[in-house]
Image (cartoon, rainbow, N blue to C red; front, side, top):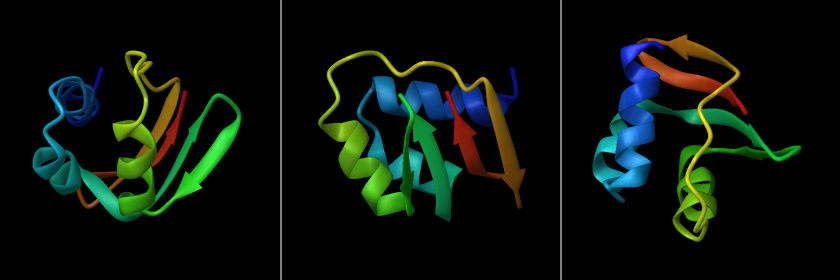
Length: 72
């Protein structure tokens, strides 16, 4: 697994949204459970209210060292 993806999973698990914001592109496309959310702040809001553990990405795209697309 890519170190950036591992870091994203760790940041979400520990509710470290400052670290998450540094790891995820501002215009991220985040798809989980068949629902796509676009934009870093919207993704953060969605994940903050999610009680279940975040699934690792089945596919992802990095741009400039940040997650740009996440599919799980």
